Image (tube, rainbow, N blue to C red; front, side):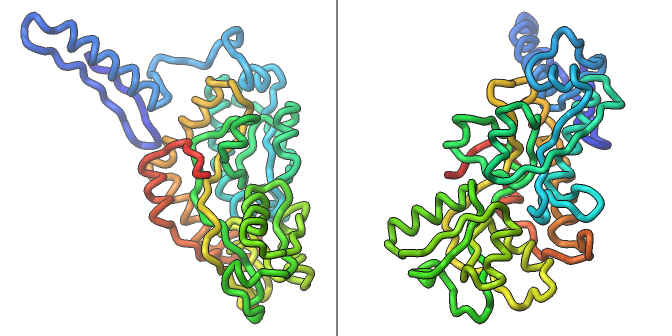
Length: 329
């Protein structure tokens, strides 16, 4: 028996069920059929499978089908993950979100499925998801164990360290140098929790400001209201690269921790989780995720052609080789 399926652009998966010795074909057949089912699930495609039937849909896919629109939560200034370039929302995570939208179109057989974007912040993204105002958010949302209590998360998109950006002439090199000083982070983020825990544990007496979004936080550091902006390392590198005077700033500090970004959607929706993860696994194992990484982190990006200069880390290379949905906190 032979089953063929397509696993990503330009690749073809073949599964063969081997016959055992005479008299033992059935156990081999059972094991072989199990491998066939696993392979078809991983590929996310069966040659003879068509669009899902409307009366079989549940959860988010049913909502999208009935509404005729998928609602994405997007960010304004999470460079280079999800941000507005003056014309539209772009970025590394946004590109993955649009791949997921394409998969939804195919699954539902809705070529004309509309996409509606709603700008979210770190503070309101989860309530908007739970209130059915958005269906999916792929921006710069950290997957934490605590957040699993209210939302579901896809396989990880990106692994990173939590550090800080400060002015090069500030004299600040590590978190101990922030003692007694005003420091800013973004409200509703895991970074805010880490920073407040550090402040209590080390008795640093930092005056912590919680900004509405990343842009507001960076501006507070830039204009002197705070001496440092504590945030995810790729986010602060993005602000440094896109500032008119990037050499005025430095990214520094022993990492407060390591975390991962993931897409966020509603809990208890296994069909939607399977669809989202099918896209992410296919992208990461086919090499497409690395291509997207190079596009958004090591090449000029819109709107001003700035290069973030953030090479692929060994941690992210390992993630792409072995996709998973593990929170790191």
